[in-house]
Image (cartoon, rainbow, N blue to C red):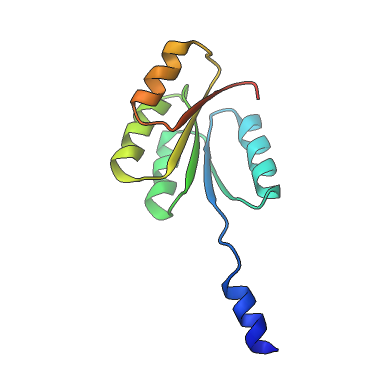
Length: 117
């Protein structure tokens, strides 16, 4: 029985690691709670500096990244991520302008979602 238990434990799926980067505390907390409840392993960052620190110390599978961060914006951070990782990047923005979407996808984002969601 013990061997079966070990085999089951070793085949358990590894949670997808998600990094939520948003300067709005409410958005970060909402996404953290929701995604964690769905079985994702979530890290959060309030700006690009904090996001870079997380990216330097742990692998991330998906980044939900606010375009309008203070300081270094989400587009710049997307370029940084693309130069170092194949993880998915979904840009999140309050701007629904199609030009913003195109620019986000051109810098390397996999998708572009507008707030509120």
